[in-house]
Image (tube, rainbow, N blue to C red; front, side):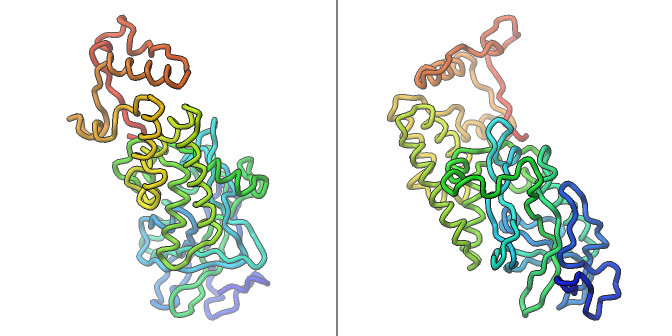
Length: 356
């Protein structure tokens, strides 16, 4: 094991050139060499690597891992410190994602995964892909931290620390209330192998609130509850409730859209009586607005598999006009649907599901 204060190896494995050094850091967007992460498992004697997760990795085990341990690290705090323009946001309307910030006296519950030498590269590659989405490659520094596993054993693990030099870093520039408001209304439409693997049957996208609630609830279930995340989850749910019951028609429509993305997720299971899809749809109906079309059930039962559904063009345009008019928006028909010069589009239109 390495001495975090001196950055030198002090145990029996000190002579190994591949033994990780606690505190060693690689810049955002880089790929740490596998050899510099390899260590010896203190219980089994296997060579392999450990990776510490504190956000989505807590709930979604990476490929290649053979062990998961509930654990924590010290000297950091977990916060929605980085803008997200891929998984749970867009360039036009960024969401927020978790990051680690150095913090004296801080303690961050999470999970650590071990992959033996045979599958260590697979786990490292997959996690690096997940943590470096397009347009966000520099948001995390890669750092070796010290954590523990059952039996009181200390192990070195790779962690992803928020990069204060990234243009997407927000840190403490936003209040907790402001972060909750942004999380309540942000979503992304990720289209990569990681997103598809961890969201089978994904129909529209992933919301920021789902990400927050998933992480918070998973930590609570493991007995490692994070008070900050629990409080932020409740505050974000309140912000979504305000959208659902807003006098602004556009806000209600937005809330219904978000609630449909969360069908079948932890956030809906935990808060269905407050922000579930039925609650949001009823709020839209109360204002005389047509509900979102087509429904997820229609997509699945269309007979075209999970990727597409055929909707009559006249019905689709009628829905678009009613929806736009009800919200006081531009009701101009989509020319790709109504233009008779486009063959057969007046008979039917095939709608592709995002991310497929």
